[in-house]
Each structure stands twice: as C-alpha cells, then as structure tokens.
Image 1 (cartoon, rainbow, N blue to C red):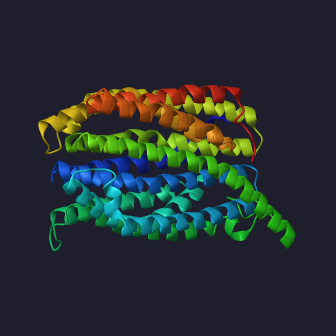
Image 2: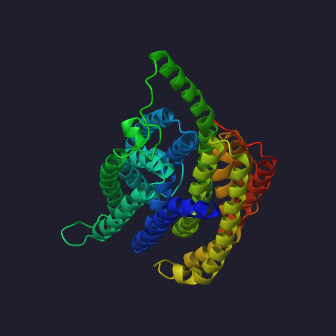
Image 3: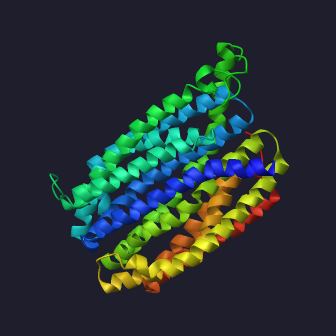
Length: 462
C-alpha cells in the first residue's frame, strides 16, 4: 500500500513538475531575450501579463473546482457525474475566455493606464495585452482537458504538449523579437505573437491525444470503471427524470465548490494587481526588478506544484471513497515532502541568485534590487509552498472551499494589501522592503490553515 502511494504520487506529480520546470526554464530564456530590449520592455510585458493573469486565475479556479469534483467522483466510481462535470466546466471556461478576450481587444489602453503613469511603458503593455488575449480560448481548452487527464492519472499527456508549446514559444520569441531570418523585429509584439501561436498549436495536439486516450476509457464507452473498460458491464439506463435530478444535484454541488474558489482566486488576483500597481508607481526600475524575479518564482513553485496537484487528486479520491483516516495520513506525508523540498530549493536560490541577475542587460541598480528581492523570496518561499500544498490542494479536496476563501481574504486584504500600501507610500521603504512586508500575509495564511487542517472538519464526501 505504501509503495502504491509513492508510485501514484510520482505518476501525477512528476509530469506536472517536469512541465513546470520546462515552463520556468523557457520563461527565463524569454525574459532574457526581452531583457536585451531594456527596462521599459521588461516592465511593459510584466504589466500586460498582470492583467491577463486575472483571466488565468479565474480559469484556474474553474479547473480547481472541476478537479475536486472529478477526483471525488472517480473515488466513488460515479462515471456519469465525471462526464457531466467535465462538460459543464468546459462550457463555463469557454464563456469566460470570450468575455476576457473582448475586454482586452477593446480596452487595452484604458486597462494599462490603471497600472502605470509612464506613457512608454503603458503603450508597450497595451500592445502586448491586445495580442496576448488571443491565447485565452486555447488556454481554456488546455486547462479543462489537462485537469481531467491528471485526475485520470494520465498527466504525461498534458506534459508532452506543454513542453511542445514552451519549445515553440522560445523559438518564435527569438525569431519575432529580434527579427531573425525572414521575420521582422517586433520586440514586445513578437513576444505576444509567439505566445499565441504556441498556445494554438499545443491545444490542437492535446485535443488529438485526448481523443485517442478517451476512446480507451469508460467515459467514452459508458462503463463502470474509468480506466478499465474490458471487464465491467454497461451501466443500466436511467430515466430522463433521474438524469435531470442528477444533473441538478451535481450543479448545486459544483456551485458550492466553485463559488468560494472563484471569489477567493479573484480577490487574490486583484490583490496581486494592487501589488503590481504599487510596484509600477514606485518607478520603472522597481517594476522591472520585480518582473525579473517572476521566472525564478515560477520555477520555484513549479518544482513543487506537482505535489499540490497530487495532493488534491489523491486526497480527493480517498475522501470520495470514504477513507478519512487514510486521507489524513497521506496529507501529512505530502506536507512533509513539500517542506523538505522547499528548504533545499531556497538554499539553491540563495547560492545561484547572482548568476541569474547577471544574464540581464539592465542598469546595475536594477540588478542589485533584483538580487535583494530574490533573497526575500528565498526566505518566504517555504511558507508559500506549504500554503500551496495544504490550502490549495489538501483542504480544498474535501469540497469545503469556503475555508480557504476566508483564509486568503484575511491574508491578502487584511494583511498583505495594507502592508504594501503602508510600506511603499507611508514608510517609503525600498522595493525589497515592501515585498518583505507584504509577504507576511503568507505566514498568517499558513497559521490559520494549519488550525483548520488539524480539526479535520474539512474532510467530507461530495
């Protein structure tokens, strides 16, 4: 049993981790390319990406709710509910993509004026946002299909297409940013177009792989067991009234799970955008320095994001099967794995930070600020990882997502945002000091979440 647990963790966590590692590595390369264009271009892409992250966060909320429901349904072997949950979330995600695409195409300049007063940076950010918005539809398809595949322990398929997208994005960045070969030098616009092309190609490939995988599962054939269609009989047909009742019940449960996640993630993302506005109003150099840390932060979290994904899926399946003691014991193991891994990565970050900042062609002052920010991040990162695994994965898997909604609301809006505004505009701290102060929200989150975890009140079947 112990060996099977480790194998299942690796089967889910390893592909997600590898995909995140590749993504973060390519992101460093992309940032280095943009870094050759100067601080204004770095800040423009950073701010344009901040607004698009609102879409990414809401989309990830839908995917998180879908993952919770699907994992528990798989644990309880409710195949029809799995199918309904996937279809509902896919339609919702595509609708969301349409709304955000329209906003970004019509009002990019107005949006970026909220982030920066620098006309040059604002213009670049608006150009980037208008083009990058074309990614939103393929991102929605990728997100929902990947969620289902990971819950069905087929996480390697999203990994393959993710790596394809990252490689293609890097090659196209090189060609379009600098104008190599027959391609024009488009700078920031080239970076956005590279992202759009890579997302579309990876989405098409993933859909082909998904169709092939689906034909070998019970979701396609209507059998009882999801991963084995050869030995189980067909499910009996149900009447239309029973089917309608099941759909209504699933819809209510889905709303109860999604609502708090959506509120939580949206408010958290708004908080992150407040932080971005704070950085932007502290000057272009401060904004550029913070943007330069993003690939490292993504790399750090990406290495351990697989554990968070595995935690949500494995604990959700155990809860769906009614195995509460097993779920609690497995949760403690996953928490310990994350803690050990984050300490090792923080030490590596401290040792390699000077090498990373040296790859950018920016002013020495910006490079120095970036180095100090990375030291602050290394200090707070183990706490962020615990919040990701415990709050984002384990506690949510029981379906009582309102717990984490309140935890994140308290952390961001009662602690992080006030400290960011005070430290930047009242206490007049430098950017590393501001980042340290607002990061104290992570400590508050973790303290509250540990208390919730130990009560076991989050453990329930959907």
